[in-house]
Every structure is written in structure tokens, then in C-alpha cells.
Length: 166
Image (cartoon, rainbow, N blue to C red; front, side):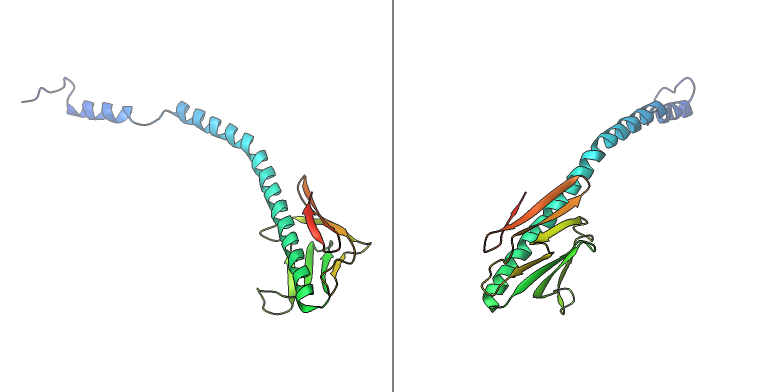
């Protein structure tokens, strides 16, 4: 037979139960450390997110420029990309919108996944990039997209409208 605890079996169970868990001081320390780490990481996270969004928008603009140039050459017809700084969007003529299956391709840079600002667009004094029937860019130009403190300039140079990002 097992010897009994001098204060009875209930004391042993209560004592084991009291030892399990964390103290209030330990929980407060863990929460304070977690809050400090979150406060340190959030500005970098926001900066990285803004940089990723601007880079994504710049890559989309470059891809649509290549598409417009190829379409102009293939169809032997003029193709334009009209940038609208006020609405932070651009339209590619002659390319159907895959979402609506009608109309022209409209890219809204203020909406997901980009959520950037179209800060400026200049092509020989206007906001329209024109590719002639040979796929040649009529006027060199550039487009600036921004998010927070981060900005990218997509420059269109040369007769074939080679796009580069700065």
C-alpha cells in the first residue's frame, strides 16, 4: 500500500495544478517584447510593400508597352497607350479587356494588386504613347509611378520604344 501524504491526496493534486502555467509577469514580459518587435518591423514592412507594388506596376507598364508595339507591327495599324494621371489608369487601344471581353484594355493602377499613384506621364508634351504601323514609337517619353516615398520612372526610348526602369 502507498503511503499517504500527511495533508491528504487533495493537497498533492492542488499543488500540481498550481505549478502549471505562466505567471502574469511572464505574460506581460512576452507581450512587451512582441510589441517592441512589431513596432520595429512595421515601417520596414510598409516600405517593402510599397516598393513591391511600384515595381509590379512598372513591370506591368513595360509588358503592356511591348504588347502595344507587337500589336502595331502585327496589325500594321497605329496602337496607342493613353495615360490618365487624374484617374491613375491607362488604356491600350486595340487590345480587348480580358475581364469584360469587350472594349479596350484599361489598367487601373489605384486598385489591387498595384495600389500605386500614376504621378506623371509625358510623351512629347502629351500623355499618349503612340506606336505607328511599323511598331515605332512616335515620341519618346516617361511615366512615373509612386507609392509612399518610393517611385519608379519607366522611360520609353528609341524608335522601337524600348522601355527601361529607373
